[in-house]
Length: 503
Image (cartoon, rainbow, N blue to C red; front, top):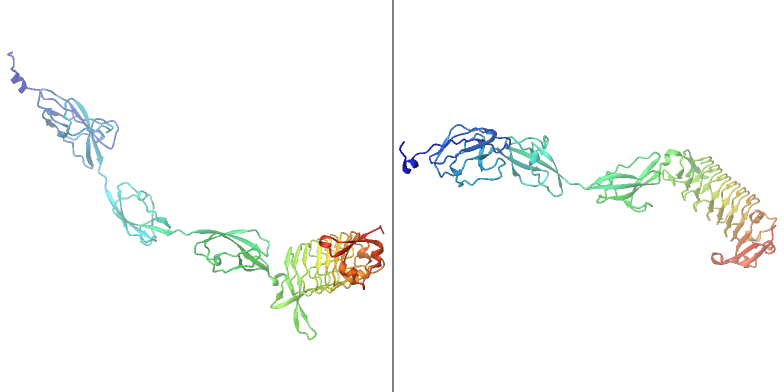
């Protein structure tokens, strides 16, 4: 065979088969490669595989001349996808510049992305002044992908399909078309904690919640059996009232005052004057409460008396408040109230009747006000725990009034006391401390007088200096049986008589 010239060799060449595969940009799994042939009309042959991945390889081939670049490769058109670019690796990390010359056999990876539909979402705001806005979502996204605007002083409630916000839309609702939706907002309302304290009735503190703009009138006031609600107060003494229309602007502590319902457990008995005219009422008690406040009036008529055996034997009773309208505490009115510990006798009472407080073992101290003129027979008999008594008015201490008060230790006889009747302090074996401001009582102190039980066991007797120094007054008994000394401190105005020898 004759030798070929170099010119002939240049004109001759073999056509190289180039295998073309296809790679999908969305799926990075093992590529499905189907080769396509590219022809290079030169003396060097390269095999180029175009990898489309799982999208497969479109039909057809391409012929390229020597010196071709990546830009000369025509990527296939695939419905539903858009071509992104050529890459040297299946992971699409090393992108090939279109001007890159092809100088060797190689696999080229073609990246595609699926064409995604875009939808325009019109956002309308309900409950807040804000213009409508547009938002774009892609196919496959849901309402949860909307960036909901945060609006100061308002809370986002949710998505709705109607302007009245009656048909809610779930956040998982897929977006499949352009749509108009409504975003509902509600104004942020401050909530305040109101601490409710109850005055006049035994009840634990409670908490109530009010929102901004509400008033005390929005508080649900508890209805308490046998008690009437008076009103709201800012202080525990219920001296500063709060109007129900007071707006609530902060968490606060308030006091709810209650008064006993006078018609529920009291019976009101008419008191008539000599002309049969109604001048007031006296009360009888039919309840079992521990703490009782006696009403000062009934149907706008004053309560002037505590009737016969009004509280007799009320063993649960521990405290009684008597109004200053009451003039008399009746016969056996509190007798046998064994747990009664606190009793106020107002400066309106003039008479404490027979056995009014007999056998009230819970009493430890009693103050008789200046208004009282009569402490009747057995009034405080057998109050076994009574320790101190102060009597200050122009009064007569009746027969056996404090008899049997075995723990009574001290008694103060005020300047107005006129008389102590026989046996008033019989069997008061613990009575050792006596203070006397009354000249008649000082003058009558003898071992045989009706006052003898007052000083029978006394070891210390204090008498006002003005009484002792008055030339019209004298007590030979004290001077002979007690040692006198000047008082000091709070008793600087007194002479102190100390028992010299045991009787």
